[in-house]
Length: 473
Image 1 (cartoon, rainbow, N blue to C red):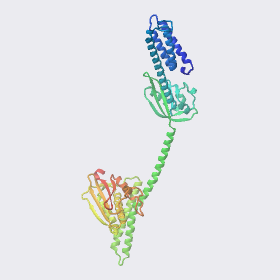
Image 2 (image 1 turned 120 degrees about the vertical axis):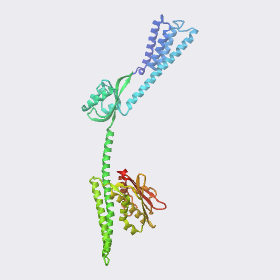
Image 3 (image 1 turned 90 degrees about the vertical axis):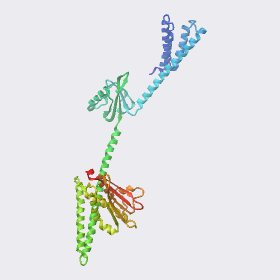
Image 4 (image 1 turned 30 degrees about the horizontal axis):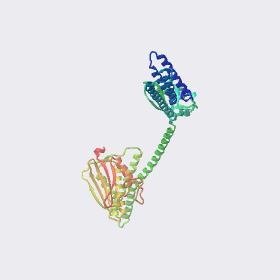
């Protein structure tokens, strides 16, 4: 219990200090007449330090009485000559100031200590102060609550023996050695509670320095249980997300297969019906039927190529990337769509650049991209009452080859034009909304870019670039 908290005892201390000052002053008076000033000022300051303000003032009053009686003329009397009054008042003022300063300094230090103690006790982390021999000096309330010990049970105990599981003691000893060498240690580990349960913690250890020397170590332990649980939940969520991604990928793959196979199969059905009509004529139109059957064979081969490419993809084999003339790819697709373009009455303008550098890519995939863009333009123009006008362009850019498919159809969505590339976005009655998504993926896989622009006053422009063969290679 603090001396200042004992009722009346602080005044006894003040009286003892002034008594000691009087005794020393009387002993030193023959050789040091003014020594009483130092002794009594020291006494009032010590009284203010240990007993606070009230005890300090009490010591000042007692000191004034003793000084007046023993050291101010006339001696041995409680009176003073008038010329001694300034001398006595000066002593009184200095004594009061000295007592107040000592009391104020002690009060400030105790408030600071109380604040630090409160901070030590109220921190949400378990804190342990150990000496250089690893004996526990002090712990906070959180430490006792977390480990289940009482303050008496841990006093002067070795922290490693108390809370470190046996398999981790060597690790803890190495950590202590690192601290002794001047390092701060921050690690995630496991500690043992009184009841034998284990606790996942983040442990931070550092030295306590006083007068340039290490006198102790602080060890701060933070509960990592919730963090571990959150990490486990995150891993579980990631696993579920990966599973969902696999399911989504399977759905996209199925949509891609359906979308890519649909075009050649539809062309085969159309040409098959045409062959039947030509053979049913009188006399049969064998030349027309032969051309239709040739188209069926060509489209069948195209479908087989799509299936083969998908099988290659699933087998994790590389797709055939070769140097291609983009104009040749465009002409092949225009030949495939010629009947459809004619049936819909669309006027086509073709502006293919001369002497374009080759691009490197998969012929079937790039054909699929051009085919998707042309078919989307045909469908967009079919949804309006205007005469359809389709433009196909290719040109050289500084570091790539640009291909454009332009139409005068219904145009792009006003609010978010880029939504046409979102999976399953479609404005067609029977569309699945994967054509442009797949096309963009193909172009980006070839190192290019696919984007859309609105045209004035009507329609849209679908553009894609491919790097030149030398750059893409």
